Image (cartoon, one colour):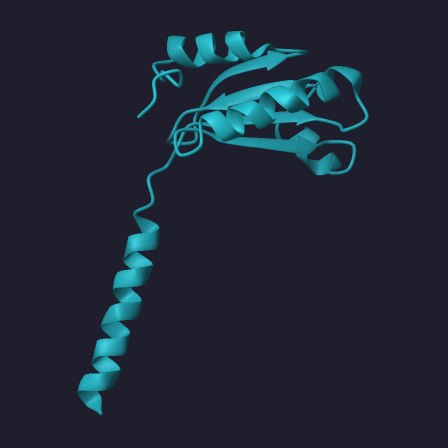
Length: 119
């Protein structure tokens, strides 16, 4: 019985350790609203990036009209605002207004993250 319990505990620890080792990814956070016209124009770009860069980039959208505390937390003055975070969570760049896909990819490359390259 002890051996059985020990085996279960070791398996649980190994599973938890494996989950904790998930690599951190750079993150693109857009703060906007689903009612804002430039934000609506950004939505398909964010969706494309989310699909095309899966496993290499996290893409997140927060509606600051629905989640007002996020606007304060991230110091949003204008929407949409895109915030580029490196894999450690450090903010590396911020852009306000519409930002095209090619410009986003170029900025990531300038920051040392080549998302155009398939891995």
